[in-house]
Length: 431
Image (cartoon, rainbow, N blue to C red; front, side, top):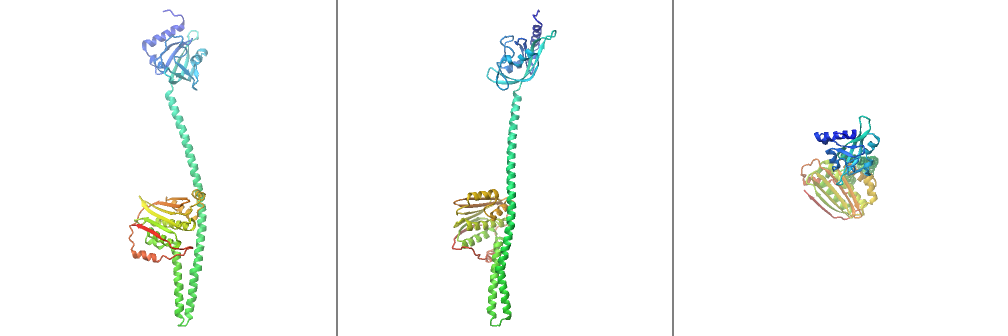
């Protein structure tokens, strides 16, 4: 066979080899060959698959690439004469890992990475064509997109975590400041309370005891006819001392709380509070078991503080108290129907612990120490305080005798209050 050029001979044997052994057609990588004029003179099955078509071999209209259309990585159209294959033919330079996007006849697009090398005449080194090996980048692009998505999500999550951390640090800092202030306030309050108790003892019990001492001295010197009168005066002074002592003891820790539990102590305290304040109290307690001692003390302090605040600040003429146990959690709610707490004051308390008095701030911290919940809400229709905490253990059902309750109540003094009046109570305790 006679060839017009060495190039024709090379391409002839290339096609013959492909047709005879079918090795090149089944390469896993797509490949095709063009002549020096850019005409496609051979391609394998993988190239046709990626192109989405089978161009005619030797067709002068099929130049530089067998793809229907081509695009650059940025999506702009690429003319066949501007392809890396055309560049390799004109310059003789190899091209590796350039990205080209193949446009198929069905409209789909396939990103590929091209590897192009010139084919030279072994005699004179002239370029007689180029071979282009190209591979599908679809899976790699998908993985890169997933990786970019993961990175964006990770950055977003990291930013969210940092924001949450900053917020938590701010809350911790605020709470630390609030605790320091509360600790300082508590020290002042304890000092004030100590001075008040000392003053009460000096002005009441102390004075009565001093008078009692003088009466006893008079009794020693008195004649028999004066002894009964002086002795009666001593008994009166002694009774006043006992009454003042019971009053101070009750204010510090009611005896009913230890002997009969929170439910009985709360009911008794509410009834006495209603009698002294003129505020109507509706109390409903569903506490069939004694609670742990620390829990009962904490709940009673919440009750005391709440009723004191209602009397001093709310202007309400009635209040409602509810308590119960549900799935191991004891809850207490105290509601009034007064003019409420100003919104800015309530918000200040929730964020910094300031604005509503030392008592509530101290109770909130005590509840936090035992993982309890403290919720204070208020509108112009009144204020609601809700507290709840887990009951780690329960005591035996109430078994205190009526005589024991009466004995504890007998030690409960009738405490004075700034304003008094008639009051009605509706108290119910389900046991």
